[in-house]
Length: 321
Image (cartoon, rainbow, N blue to C red; front, side, top):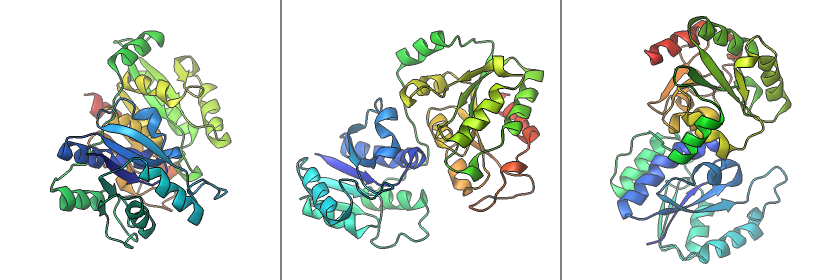
């Protein structure tokens, strides 16, 4: 049986969130699942060791110029032809789009399972998926995504970067897709100071390429802790994953690295400044830190300057011991 799962949300984090539901489909039908995802999900870079994933098909749509090969009416027919070549028996569509419903049917997929049509507004990213899977295949799926790296890659990386068992190796995910998500460098530096006053620590700095992210990175690298830092900026995601796996704990902005870290099984403190809390708390490996004075967070909380280093360190100690 050939099964396709369509997950058309943007970004690494959303891709990670949907993994348990895709895995559940594979287990139910005892087969690997093919997935249709956007290129910026970076799925090929972090799913190559996931045993329940077969082919990763890239959905070329919704880029800035709206000129992807699957954009518009012409692009819809291109996608129909692309999918028809695979001869899928079933499709599970993790959205309420009539467009994808019609594309699947015109591609000759006889069994179409999909969210309720035209009900996108106010959908809870996890509860909607859980209800969908329970309704369609009678499985209750907890929200606990997992990704994998090979043992050989982990051991090779441990030697290459001189990971020591008597040190506390910490991933700092200092990047973020938007300015309101990026915690200022001084907060990370003060947290690092608290760590080094109490423990022997080494910090691995992960961020993106945007100028604003590079500024935060450079400010940390110019601090008194520069000799305890390893800059991951020039590495691709495939090489970063085994580094994360070698870390004891992660402290990350709400970014791709928080999702990847938790899915790799690393205890992950998530600094929540301006995003719905669910994005930093859906995994049992996540420990959200909220801005001072806030009981929850959502869009427009604008709390990046109100994250307390002392609060991060207190959670850090609780996790360690």
